[in-house]
Image 1 (cartoon, helix red, strand yellow):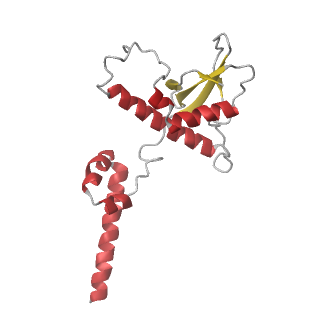
Image 2: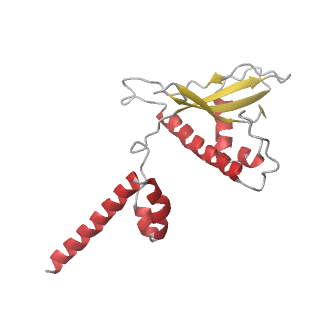
Image 3: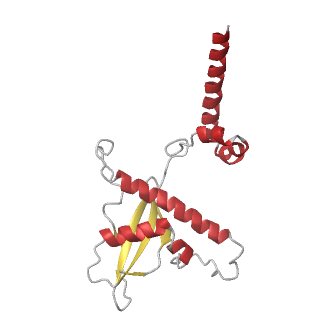
Length: 193
């Protein structure tokens, strides 16, 4: 009798866990609303694995840079070749750039969330330039000193062809291959090499 009760109790726990996991995967508002009310241990056990479904990543991110010479002349943007996503039938088998692309994806998500929080901040509403649709370089020291920004700057300086450059600037572009749409996400300030 007690063995059956233990089996039913364990089955109920696993059934509730599966239900919370499915609810988390389907309803994005569940994460922000319900998991805050759950005990910390229970909320920790409910995974948040939405990288592929039901909201897959639709954008590819590209890391670009440009050399700036001593006279502040900046030619066109160049893409770091190891970062872009190469479409290939064998990508599922051999994808040596997978970790670099995933890191760029995560860093872009973090930087854009930090930037959007700053734009919504009422503290600097008077200091902000008007939104005229132009993408401005990020000059805020709190962003430039963030680990994500410094990682990207270090990666660009270490991997880009910067021969003859006194300074460097980098940018992240989002590209949606299904509709061939490109959107600039982030432009750095100009940094000395």
